[in-house]
Length: 417
Ligand SMILES: Cc1ncc(C[n+]2csc(CCOP(=O)(O)OP(=O)(O)O)c2C)c(N)n1
Image (tube, rainbow, N blue to C red; front, side, top):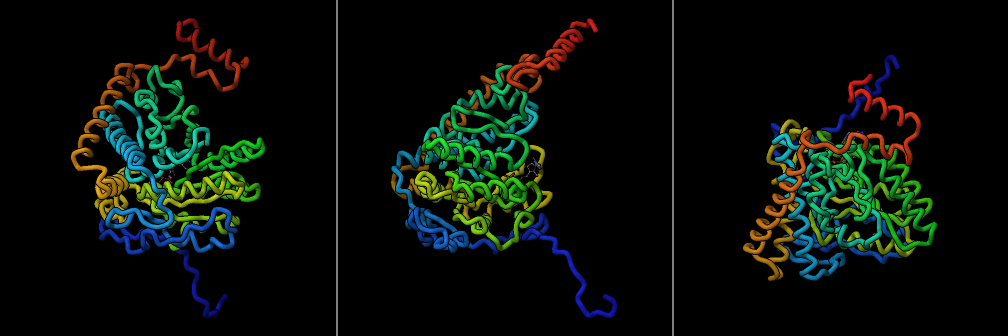
């Protein structure tokens, strides 16, 4: 308006707290106090839990002791199994990332720093509960001893690839391990998980579903659709946001206002949201147990935000030093999940540096053997699944078009066109 003294409008462009040429700044991270957040009864009305998403649920304190009401009180044996699953994930990631640099696979993604989440959830949930993962959740499979060679065969797209070379490396599918097929399109499986949970309830079954999205993926419409359906039908599901602070180079402030916990989004849909230290194996387990009990007793869905940090690059195609300080990971205020669980076990007198060292060596060797086995079958381009496989499973049966295309391929290959 001419002559008006209204201020000019300004578009807010979110700016990450740190850049490659600035000091690391995590002053916005409020760690709270381990053990301080209350644990409501699973049947408590949603209206009485609206403070929860604004607190951070933690069990392991700075002295590596397990404190507070969310402590799942696990046996040392279970904790060691969890530690092993996380360490195996890390050893596998390191070796397969290198395999990419050696030209043995076209692509890889690590989950460094986020291992506690899928490892604890894989162990805390029951066989037959269905997990709808992202590409950063292989700890689920490692916790259930999925054959490492089979994982490598998929990553090398070789003749023994269980997905017959049809998927990008690491988009695994393992139904027998309750691990739903990963797809490249972000967010779509969040909705599938809710539908799966609705089906389980419709059939009066006892199984629940669990689904992941990253912080960036919450900006997809599928997130909203899944939340809406989960709320309306009180679906027995656990919906998780793995907030690792980044979506490739975009910091989490692009997907939600910087001061709003992703967990708080649940409030608008009418079910509880909790924010959990994702680098704390015990807190992940305790929170999952609570949400699972709620789902299994018809108290409906829960949204869990796992607060964590993507310690490495987004993928083999990414160089994080282009958009964040090189040493940022070292300063993450919630530390490293492997180191914290290790520290806890040592504090309990159930583990030692020597045992840790020995296990790390053993797992490294185990991964090496599996990679060698897969390499003997073939790495990228050296060995391929049978070519006819590409026509299979488009439909349940080949239709006439696919039959024609398959015949054409063969006649061309035989030089008869
Ligand atoms: C629908 C869709 N849009 C964009 C992409 C490209 N893409 C792949 S990963 C990614 C970032 C996802 O970030 P986030 O959800 O935070 O998960 P994170 O990788 O940090 O675990 C993007 C944009 C995609 N795969 N699918």
